[in-house]
Image (cartoon, rainbow, N blue to C red; front, side, top):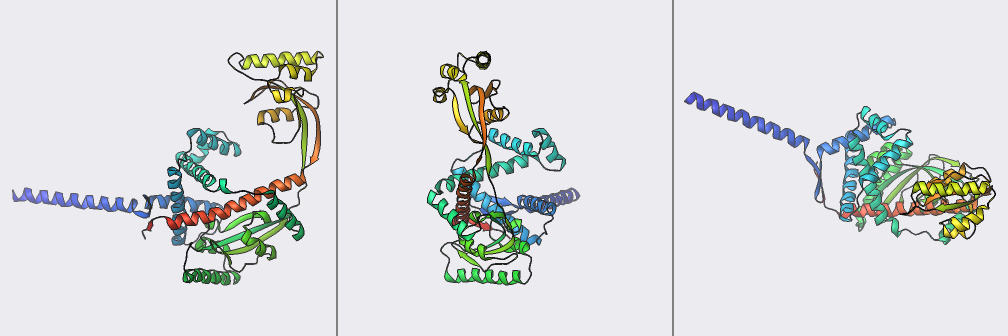
Length: 430
């Protein structure tokens, strides 16, 4: 009896030890590394993201930072992404399966693959297609959230566009492109004078080290609070309009490989390095087309086959001598152009729906197309003339408008993300 009791106790101790070791193992795998409002980030999630970032950096032959610094930057990015997803959920921002699959198909097409080939290629490289879709869903949600929270507030006036063009021309750098490196030492809203001074001292210290030869990309990865820290602070090639306004004057004065003094903004202290410069003169000539059409819409009485038949009958009548314009006035369902004999006037690239434009571009002057389907119905298209047009002035205005808008969005996004981070409940577990 005593022996049996000892065996039971031994078994109980073994079970206890086994359970404890399983618990310890589970805690190691599922250890919480950060609490972000009502969500948590687990050790396993952080490890996966660090591994993915490490692989991307190794593939691009970027020098890897120390592991502790890499984990810190990746965790900060995960915290910011989590906060944005939480806000998106509250705002009802979602991504349909149709939109997700369409985006995946677009990426596959850009890589000259079918969706199945792209999926097989991912899996052959040890990447989960589901994880790819999850990452893409998160990116789309965050982009939609930013468009909702920030994009709608951004306006660019005609006077801003004219002022920038005039300023560029006076400075003589309208065709100059700058390749910039960027480090941000962030300052929270409402920071005390001592906190601001501490941030400035850190920025001053970094500038000295950088000017003494310390690697800029490594410093950005280690110390920058900017979104692109893990890219080594690389802002890529930018025109003067694409550069945040508080940095423009400093950038214009800089020489190749020069590191700027810290530049103060509402978000903190910026350090810029001039990585390269180039002249990018653009003579923008476009081909315009004078075109007319006859449209037959489908409805309960006219299906696709009937619409095509009617257009083919009209095409035969035109070939037999009937006037295109007269037939358009009588038969076209596009009432706006029908009054003008189907004439759409001179059109520029991108101004018409894609199926129509693609068919139009294949026609020679005076040639009439086969029936062409678009979302509006079925078209019979005739090209009347073509000519080149120097669109440089209008093109420049459009580029400047878009660049100013992009710059304003970047500035607002930086402040918005900093505010989101500062106002959230976040607890980081070492």
